[in-house]
Length: 170
Image (cartoon, rainbow, N blue to C red; front, side):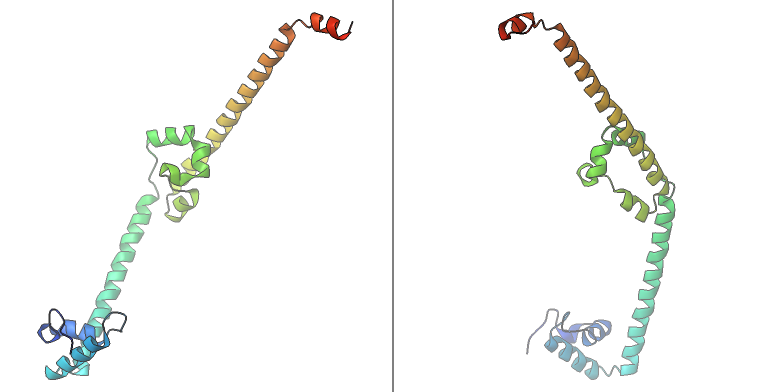
């Protein structure tokens, strides 16, 4: 017979009931058997055991209700949470990168914001990302146009008369 630490016989009645009514995933079959035997020795009836189990179920349901209330309070408080100024600036500057890979910059994705009920943050993110994409597009377009303009100026500055004479052009 296996000895458990603390021994099954020294455990309190609620622990014994828990062990006796558990599965072999939680306790070995030998521990379950010893707990049932100890409950019989202590003359704890099935009715008394059922009352304890029912009490645990009630406590568990109350615990779940409390968790649900806390979750609802958390979701309600998330509803009006806003980005801080420095976060908005970072979102604006790195918007396209953050949009593609939000986990690289420790930002939630748009889907996460919606799921966690960050309504104001969701709207702010959409607006900031839209403005960021527009600004990045305009910046890139401006640089392309500017480089094309500089390239054309370089081409116009080049004197190709020697080349024309060498290759037989007028």
